[in-house]
Amino acid sequence: MALPTLQNLKDYLRVETTAEDTAVGAMLGRAEALVRHLVGRPIEDDSRTYRIEGDSNRQTSFDRLLFPQPPLDPASLAITDKDGEEIDALLYHVDGETGVIRGLDGYRFSDFPYDLEADNGLEHRAEYAVVEEPMLSDAILAYAAMLYHQRNPNASQESTAGVTVSYQGMSMPLRTQEVVSALRHAL
Image (cartoon, rainbow, N blue to C red; front, side, top):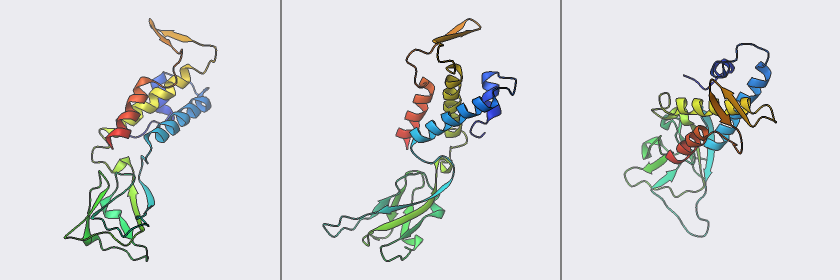
């Protein structure tokens, strides 16, 4: 499974023509951009560098650092100190899910600032393909469908097959809100 495509959204909406492809594609793009923004971390693999500053008012030394946007690929992590020297990976252990980098055998991080570079994104979670990706796809489809149904600014509700959906005061579908909240707080 991957994030939704235009065809996935058209199937979801039961749109069978190509007449609205441009508009439906724009709605999908808008929904995906909003969900990505609200999740607050990369979804697909993305190489990022973060600077970890120490406390300039006192000498500091820590037995652990925190990668700001986990999850990450532990094998891709490179840590360089203030002098540009790379820290030997045998001196620390990385928990890719949490982003905690722990010094081993008494090693302490004391040569601040440190630059942490790694491949990160939700895609690095062990359960991404069976948990996060389907949740994200559902959230994006739900939001794009709401945008599609609200494309007529004068519409306040729509009825199909005996089911009526009201658009009054709806800014984002509850399913989308729940997924975004779950992913922001679980990581």
